[in-house]
Image (cartoon, rainbow, N blue to C red; front, side, top):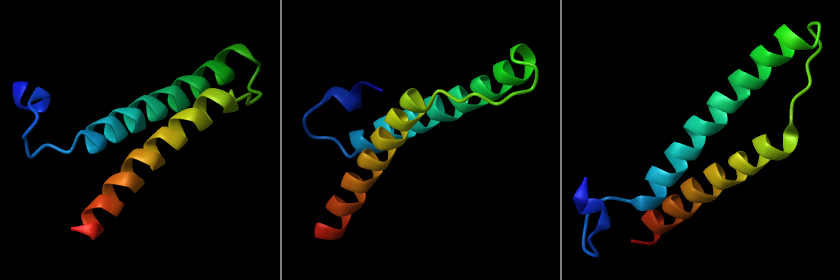
Amino acid sequence: MWKLFQDKNEINEKNIIGFASFIVMTLFAVADLVTSIIYVDGGLEINEVIYNSFVWVTLGCFGISAFEKTKK
């Protein structure tokens, strides 16, 4: 784990951030669905601002990582 904080490492930090963002985005979506079904009489109300911000972080991290991989 400490190799992540070194300047010279083989770990792609953008992939780690992108994957963590994807996990949080998925957990948020599931929690939003469950709470809307339980507390709002079955009506679906999704908070789009938070979800969209995680989508952009995930796509940005994976997009930058893919672009860097093709430039090598």
